[in-house]
Length: 445
Image (cartoon, rainbow, N blue to C red; front, top):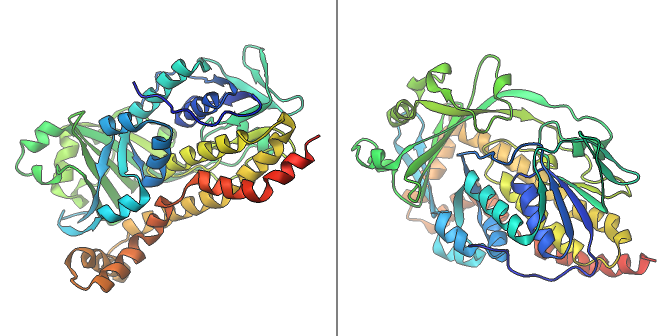
C-alpha cells in the first residue's frame, strides 16, 4: 500500500484542527501528522463522497506527490499524458498536436497525469488511518472563534487548538468567514461543466470512435463557446469526458454538485454544434453530472491578523470546476505550509510563518486563477480572426518544419502553462526561510 515517506520532524508539535475532509483537508492532515503534529479533521459529510470526474496532475503537482512517497500509487492509477490533441469542436478534425517532449518532462522530473477524484481521496483516507489521524465525519463546524482559538461544533462541543486550517471548500466556507470577518459574495454564473464517462471497450469496438481512444492523449475539442476534454483510463476501462459551456435558464440546482447524475436530455446542450462522435458518446452515456460554476472573488487575506487560522485549497483560491491547476494549487499549499511549520520552535511563531505562507501563495494562486480564465477564453473563441490566429499557431506545432517558428508558437500558446510546471513550493519556501527565518527565531521569546 502507498504511504507517505518520512521527512524532517517539526521541533515542536502543534495541535491542529482541519475543517473539511476533501482532498485538501485529508492531504494536509496526512502531511502534517507525518511531520509530528497532532491533527484532528472534522467533516460535515459521512466521508463517502466520491466524484467520478478526472483531476489533472500537472508536473508541479505530480512532483510533490512523488516527494510524499506516492510513486507506486501514481504508477498504478495515474494516466500519463504526453500530448494534447486539439480538435475542431463541430467537425472533430484535428487542428494540431502539442507534445510534452521527453526532454522537457525529464527536466521537470515529473509527468503530466490524470487521476480520478475518487482514487485520490481514497488514498488519502487510507493514509490518514495508518498515520493515526483522527477524522470525525458527520461533524459540523458552525463557527470559528479567534480568541481563544476554537472551532464550535453543531452539537455544542468546542475544539481548542494552536492552529486551524480551513479546507471547507469554495462555497459557504465557515473558515473563510472567520478570516475575513464577513461572508464573501458568491455569484452564480451560467458556465456549467458536464462530466460523464462511457465504456472504453465499447469505444474501441466502434470504428467511428476508436480514433479518440489512444492512450497518453488528452483530446480537447475547441468550439464556439465550449471546450470538451476527453481521455481514456485503461485500468478502469472508461473514457472520461467533460464539456464546459454556457447554459441558459436557472442553474442554481447544480451549484456545488459533483456526484448527482441527470439524464442528458434534461439539458439543451445544442448537440448539433458538437463533433458527431461527441453526440454519440452522450447518447451512450445517457446521464451526466452537471456542475455550475459559482464565481467567488479571491479573498484579500488567507490568514487572520495575528491569529492562527489559515485558508487552504479552494477556500483560499476558488477556481473554475474544470481548472487544470485547481488541485495542484491545493497540493502546493500543503507542501509549503508543512515546510514552514517544521521550522518553528515555539507555537508563538505560528502567526509569522502563516504570514510567510500567505506571501508565498497569494501571488502564485492569483496568477493560476487568471491563467485558467484566459485559457478558457482562448479555447472557446467564436469564429473570427482571433480563432483563426489561434488555430494557425496550433497547426504550426504539428506541421511547421521551422524549429524557431515552432518554438515561438509553443511559447505563445503554452509557455505560461509550462512556467507553472517548473514551480516548486518547497524551493520557494526555503528561499523565503533562508532570508527571514533567523529573524523569526530571534523575535520569539
